[in-house]
Length: 441
Ligand code: GDP
Ligand code: MG
Image (tube, rainbow, N blue to C red):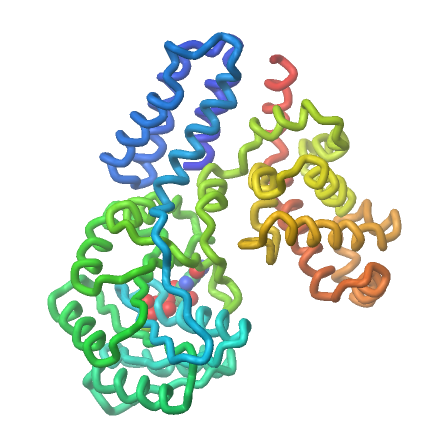
């Protein structure tokens, strides 16, 4: 999906004389890509209309930067689709917050409830898990294993077959023990069926959760909307978690689910590991949907600034991305400000580890620390692909000491660089074409 949309944007905005015909063709191409990615047809036509209205081609004064306008309109409309502007539940310290998970079997509930418990645990909440899946043999075992690995207390039963009863026992026990985040995992079975919905309602009645979260697999496709609606009616969830966003799915179904239920996505699952859970950020999600950040927009913006990027661009077209490239880009971001806007335009930069949810001041402090880290490296290290840090881990400690940060932060920086290097490798070819196009303008 991303490739097709950015391709469409790119083709239209590359046309030397961007006329209405090129604009229409671009809109059609983007709509086609969204439909193919399982975004609901009504949403797509709404999006198309909104963009047409925003851009209103006929009445644009000749001096206006049409490309920028179109890119922004497409981006904004996509963000609107995934951001229902509804507040979601936040657990409060010193109180027992009960969160119940619902969703079909295989969606990722059991995996995600451990991730979420760990997330809150890391933020100082006393978190625990209750297994109310008595339907699938082995469900309790799976939760037990995950919970043990994450050192999270759990409750379940191998003999009791009434899920509502187990749920109530577990929640009561943990409430008594003053746990602050109590997450109830439920069964999903294979299909939506009345028995499943009845079971969900029974559990809800038994434990009266403060929040019900629906877990949706990103690859669900066209059924997403109907499924989310049916679950919403039966269990009235207040938040959605999309899992498996690390896979090949384009996530169009997830967009339709959000739009159909007006329910915010709160987290996304990005892998099978315990730590693979990210807070959902609409702009970043759309960036990912668009594949590689708003590169044409970024090009334009930086062309007006005297930034240090020739070297990096050359590198990327060669499929390389060194630590020095990362340092240059970090200092470019510092020059460009406001950060929250700019970071999102650079591929990979929108999800710098730990930056999500920070305000500009915080993230600028973090960027500065990242630059200090780079500046504590030798030239040889800076011009490397970072691998030597993996082979010889004492290097990290030395750099951490030198820059006055934790080893963890050095590790994060190297992770970031590795990710960008991977991306550079993939983009090498397409960037070359884009550069040619930029020069032709
Ligand atoms: P449940 O039936 O809803 O409880 O689903 P599970 O938690 O058992 O997950 C089903 C499968 O999806 C397991 O193999 C998980 O490892 C996998 N899974 C869950 N979340 C993610 C994710 O974010 N990324 C990936 N790659 N796999 C996931
Ligand atoms: Mg499960």
